[in-house]
Amino acid sequence: MDKSEVNPIMACRGFPAFPVVLVAVSDGKGNSNVVTIALVHMFSFNPPVMGIGVSPARYTYELLEAAEDFSINVPSKDLVEEVLYCGQRSGREVNKFEECGLEPRQGKRIRSPVIEECPVNLECVKRQRVDAGDHVWYLGEVVHAEMAKSVDRERAVMYWAGEFRVVGDVIRRR
Image (cartoon, rainbow, N blue to C red; front, top):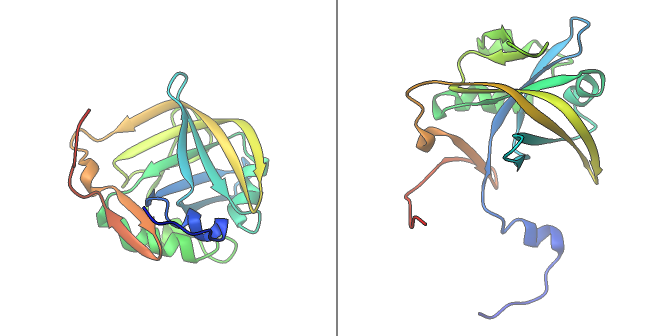
């Protein structure tokens, strides 16, 4: 395989697509927001710990700094327009729940809402904050989870290079 040296930022663009989630957070003072996040990853299976990367320029960052928890909501491809909207508009300017017709439902074990329309809801309690360059990672232990009985993982939304995608074919199983 012939390779040449490239800028590390460009090489990171060779990384596969990221899952896209809707993160909902409330600061406990009546301020809440939903934002599209493509920097999301599972950091531990036991206990289950999820991480989200948020830019300090985002309104959600301000809320996360004040909040004790957040929810990670996995949208299906039917919500791609809402996902796009929630990633392009600031919660400082609009109520994205209302504008998108998303129903925030009180979490069972957290103060932040979950999103009713998403087939998977993960309620996370903040455990760690990591400064990592232009994003801050918030690691949250999943303390409650709900999943629709008819979840189709192939309808989960991913994002990369300006394109929303869904999972393709399975090429091999272990």
